[in-house]
Amino acid sequence: MTFTTRMFIPAAVVVALSASPLMAQEAPQPAEQQQPAPAPQAQAASVEGELLRVDADAKMITVRADEKEQQFRFTDETEITGAGRDVEGLSTMTGTRVTVQYKVEGESNVATKIDIQARAEQPAPAPAPQQ
Image 1 (cartoon, rainbow, N blue to C red):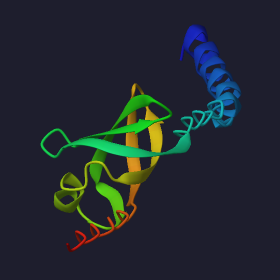
Image 2: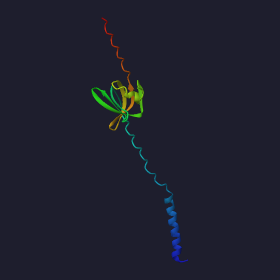
Image 3: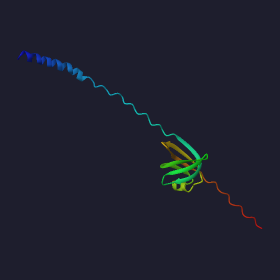
Image 4: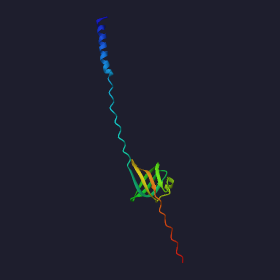
């Protein structure tokens, strides 16, 4: 063997042996990912007023409370209680007092519960006096 070959082999072995501890080190762990902050929950509120309109196709109701009209979108998950108990019954109840519990989602008010209050019974007219 030539002198160059005899020097090259030990040098290669030294390089290989010194590189192996570097390769054995653990790979650095990626920084712990932060959980995104939870989205702010829609704020719940309620309003009591007179049911003015029901648009079953658009799934919207309009209620007058404190001399101003407010619109509410309702969904299949909206709970309807009291007289009428469903959208069809609700549409026949205009003029009735309702309490709407809702949450604000973006630009719209979404009804979570609509409580229809029973209409006050109209007293029967007094009989005409007989002559």
